[in-house]
Image (cartoon, rainbow, N blue to C red; front, side):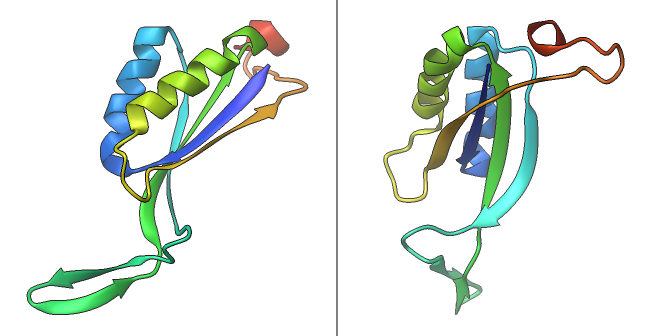
Length: 112
């Protein structure tokens, strides 16, 4: 199994969620995140005053899938989150050794 973690722009979350649902992903975890990459934040203007945004708001999305679906799910997320502009985010894949469904005690594939 694979844990796919994506950090994307908040306004792309619904596009990514819909694409994953179309692909057949049945569960995901979403949390708010903030950070910066190479650009180290950015400058914005609010009511005529310029200010620095050091930590850019993002959304962190986590999905656990079977090994066979890992590459396809990765591709679905990247295509749905892509805007072609700086700050689109990152996606990474981590191997998962064991999953336990707390309610029933089911393990691994049965716990998905």
